[in-house]
Image (cartoon, rainbow, N blue to C red; front, side):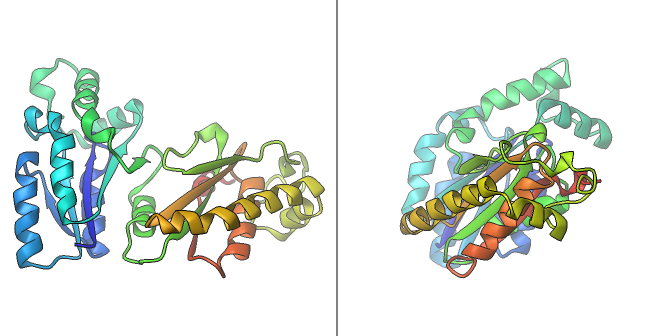
Length: 283
């Protein structure tokens, strides 16, 4: 089996949506099986169906004793190939709002007097899974379309490692799934130029402004040299992707410019994807 993926996360974080998306990109998915049954089921599927990609959904409804044995179960699954663990999460206020909008009951609602208490208890119960995650994905600011884009890039079928370059704004939080984060808030900010303020790093005026600054060019050169040196090393470790996040204050000018410039420079060497996380906030 080429890829075996365990998908878990707190209720309301998007686990069910993630499984549907994974099916769309070629995974065979099974949801809500008791953890203790997974080694047997995977062995049977591996033997009889010759599946390339399998996604297994695990949530707080599985017996607590199984969750406590997650480490052991994970080791058993590794007999069938590489195992990855995707754990989805979101801020408590976002989860509360999502439950309020859908009026769904939390799986632990019968054991706790408030939804907040249920969310806290769920986080503790799923800790053994979260602690072994190979990818932590914060869906607080993602809609379904953005979740699909992210998973399609990170969990697709390509054998060659993909470089994911993501711009973001520090005022909206650091991406939790980034392997490397570069802070470029020290560079000249087009926001303080009245004519450039409403524009973005995709606009030529902003690109000309930033491209004429020696510190911007120096930062580009340093990041480019770093990635050029270390990408082959990461690829040798059989990683499917490497996520590099570049952040400025709002995620509109400097980080966007550098992400696109780096993508243009590196895409001849590596499959490259660009994500501009704060695009929805651009005025």
